[in-house]
Image 1 (tube, rainbow, N blue to C red):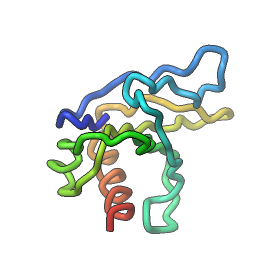
Image 2: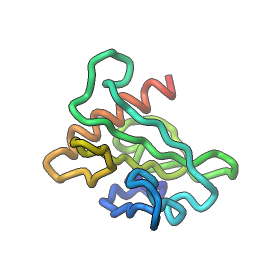
Image 3: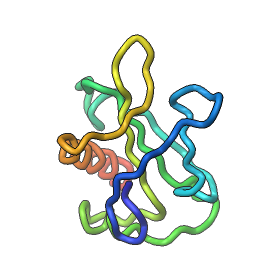
Image 4: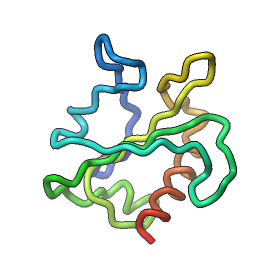
Length: 119
């Protein structure tokens, strides 16, 4: 999670009780609501990703502070928290933790997404 306070943290986003595995509890990170986008291809291309990913952002209904982590890593002005989660593969797709060995890949994926959105 890229926090508006400037930190980049691993947070566990648990599924909602008795809901599909891709319905995550995010109200602590996004108290005013969130929007999300599922990424199936590398942003700006048709190159299919090995796993699908989901970017979760503030819904913008309330003014959020500038995200200093996004500014530091990507040099872009973004408001509110940003979370990035990965789908596991298998018979049933479900969201999964981003393992430590994929953090750099996740940063690249998010940088491409942010650059497209904020061009």
